Image (tube, rainbow, N blue to C red):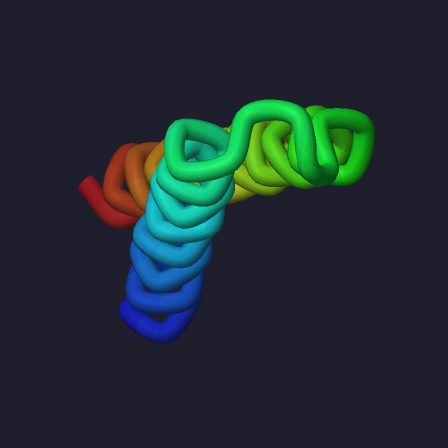
Length: 70
């Protein structure tokens, strides 16, 4: 189960980095690739949401397993 938590945390970190990098590129040259950067940030947002959902599911499963054992 720890691997799931680690993978979700890495995915969240990657999504945040991806979003920050895209925002920095847009700030440096706002009109160069605005459409591409908008898509990049939307994908990063989706990546973040998916990894948060994985984290929540893993947490729920861990709680359920603990309830069964008790």
